[in-house]
Image (cartoon, rainbow over all chains, first blue to last red; front, side, top):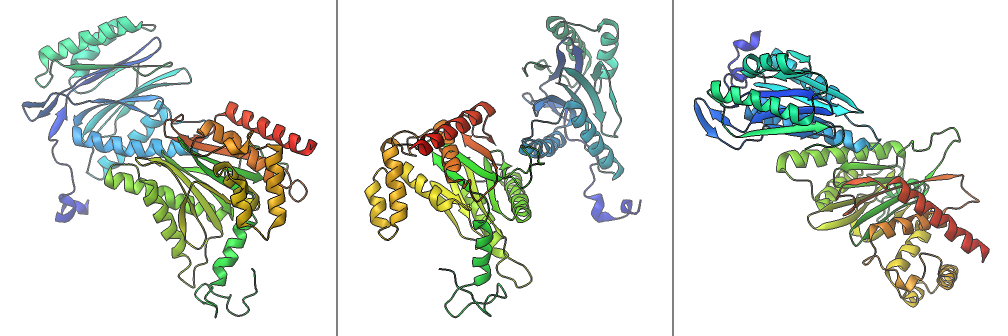
Length: 209
Length: 287
């Protein structure tokens, strides 16, 4: 790409992440989605921020969890905010569901990667619409997939093996939370950038809690 | 009031000898020919109502929306040329989202009205553009409470507690004034030459049709729930059965009850309002 040589576009490329969040773990349970993340923001090797909200509800049907660069996550939230606003302004009884949001995010992440200016995040998008549960993941190079349980970062190596063994269809809310806590405990033991303050979010067809 | 501006009405950049710009006045006539649009400011919010004249029996009910949300906290009802209206709504949405992304808060309604008015006015300044053939009633709820603005094709925008544009605006404004000023005599003093209007007002008073006893009705004390019923009654009242075809009533509100979000009036309340309006009409016809 010619822009590699162009000094002007160089200054616009993301080269390294600065304030980062660590793993997000999520699974489908009987009534919806459960998602957990700790509330830490690391500045390199320093655990600098201890109250960062890394799980956010989006619109009426979805939950977004992010790891990676926090400022890029905030930018993504701004894009989504505008998307949801325009969706609401139609006022036609329809609204964007988790599948649509996941697709939108995939397009955004992949296109940014192709311009060599990625949003340095791995995102977990889960939700319920019309009784249908959905859980997906997309990362900074645009890899995306949908599964019954997902994780980002070190969670992929530490949490997912636990989930592969112990996850089953029809987990109750309590069982799901216990399973997530187990994963988060292992991550706290083994992940240098994890802190001991976690946030667990549930999204079921009846409410967002 | 209307005169032919022979020769001085060909361009929006031409003044007539008596200081009028005829093209703008002609644009206002396009608004006058459209179905009535009403907005009122109640104690806890704004109610907008539109008399949507149905052009064809084959149209689906609920289509051809005349009231649009322009941001979470504000909405706009359009009267006049529909395509021009769509353009204004698009521009307003864009102004509102732009303000939000720059300043981090929802655009104050006053600011939004000024921007819409500037945009409409812009199109009256150049000979290669024509004025918008639509008027707009903009209602929103911000930090300073609920506010109602009206923007005309000339680009003027004023703040109102009650506004009406379109075919039945004179009759509607009278109703709205009645709702807010309890003294009818005040009105008679203002309209000494318009006996027909005074008679109508008197007859309405004596029938006590609109919302019970008019003397008791005040916009400052009315909640939006009550306001919705009143707006429906007014629109049904000003609809001219003889001249116009069927119409569909479209209403929206921004109020404390709707969590300060602009949205369509909930279906059950809309049905209640329509029923009350039809009942009020029958009462009036019976007399």
